[in-house]
Image (cartoon, rainbow, N blue to C red):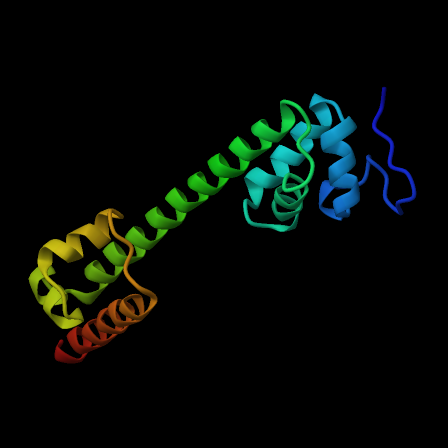
Length: 152
């Protein structure tokens, strides 16, 4: 049987992002695998977005058998994947800044006020630098890059 929403201004055929929380609850409680897959696809694309938050909210008071545990795993997995990608992106920016600076790793580390080993953890993504340190990293890269162009 096809999913139906009652007393809502959206249809199950509308994009999931347009669904209000009541529609998400209906899909979780009375939907099919196809409906849950649509929710999962949106959560995978935006693990902290509106739909993910709606699913999270519904699960605080409605525990559809089997689906609740599945959706909690989906949320955890999507968020962990996003965090890995974000960590890798920051590491890439750190590596790019070091390269752009033209400094050795030791000089770069000294300029940002850290050790070479700590800089290495930032560049590999093992540790994520604070926002303030990231600004310092970018500033040192830009300043060093412009200094090396002035010397030439």
